[in-house]
Image 1 (cartoon, helix red, strand yellow):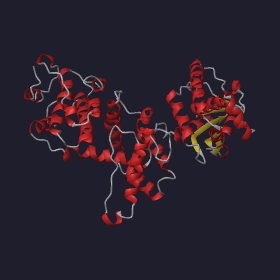
Image 2 (cartoon, rainbow, N blue to C red; image 1 turned 90 degrees about the vertical axis):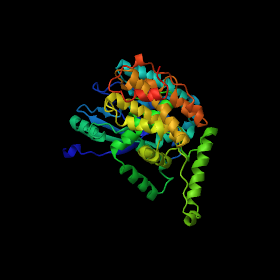
Image 3 (cartoon, rainbow, N blue to C red; image 1 turned 180 degrees about the vertical axis):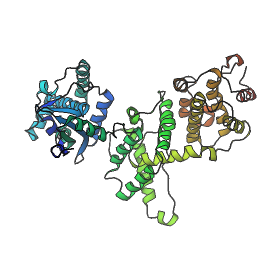
Image 4 (cartoon, rainbow, N blue to C red; image 1 turned 90 degrees about the horizontal axis):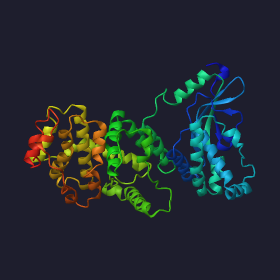
Length: 450
């Protein structure tokens, strides 16, 4: 990289971003496609962090071409959304005038210049998103508006060579590979811990996370936690992507939302903190673990990391801690040895079985676990027997259809509320699968074959 193109990042406020002139969106950029979910997350963050000294929104990379134009290489989606927020503040007469009293230099936008786009998809999405943002800005007060303009920041990078601009963009995005969803969650929850958890404890939390194999984290989130949480709510859970990270975001113990439901979680959080930090723990050496539940609302920050470690251990220890007897023991043995177990479809069904069993144990422990294994086996492996091929979509759809097994576990107040669920009898003529000869006798033994 030449000396004149040396990267010199500059931290600028949203106000300075809005006042940057000569900015253009080049034709090679994809359309503006931020969803309602994206804009609500951004507005929520502004409202949540408005008391912070600063809030970093990301990086904007420009290519400064020969005509003196700043072409946006990276950051178009966020930049346009920030312009929409500023426009909504400007159009909210009361908010704008009240803010102007304490901030006379509040930027006034040249909308025709700032939102100069030609793509029809971009135009439609900008119009739709502005209407949504205008509603959200009604929640802003002067303090929020000032925070938005003066304390929200981006990292501005300007390069004169377009190829170097794209190289920089790629390096910022892990050399062209998106961050894994769990990495995004790590960044979010570390930020939530700032000014709450001391540095030593933060270091230990990060070390524990980093010492966990990436493949294990992918498995914990993608194959277990994400699927259980979504299936419990009747939602699809085929693949865990960065668009799904909100499933693992919740309430912050240090933010006092005026919602009664949040009080229960804060009470639990602070009671356990107080108990474990009490000087008497130096005498009795006792420690109270937070009572995590798979379908509970997430507590952001420290508790999130504790929760992941808790379920990492629980998932890995299922085989060790569950010691079934009788038919349940036979089921576990057969699932580990039958001929077709290594096929992709059979792995999908086993994942279905394991997720349901983990969810049951998470709620009721090992009480009546043998009956639970039997019931979950009948439900999950009926799917295997009646389909010649089991696809990811087959498994996913089955998880949220009648008899709504995950929902029944969630709603159960005692094991029998779930264990008495009705599973359709298997008809021999309905069996389409091959290499499942060891499974059928179990259905016969439990009188579930007609």
